[in-house]
Length: 78
Image (cartoon, rainbow, N blue to C red; front, side, top):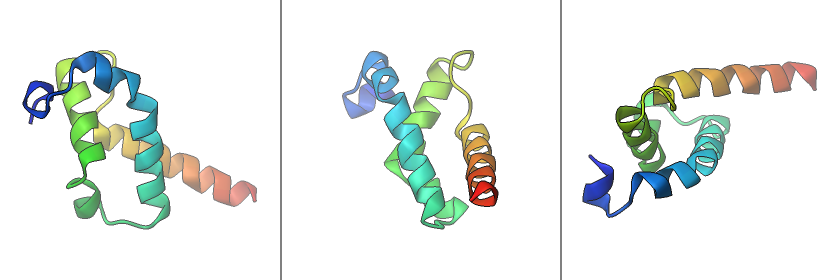
């Protein structure tokens, strides 16, 4: 899946990057399975950004891992 096939430009995807991260974090907080998350539009958009600009954007797997650690830190701090 590419940005052009969805009618979005890379610039539009980039401008919504932090929303995609926030949505991914919400999916993790909801306890969604990895397989379920990988089927979402959010995952697809993060994948597209990484594939087009790998030096600027991490792979969705790496982002998921970062967010899981962040969630664990937040839950232990409470």
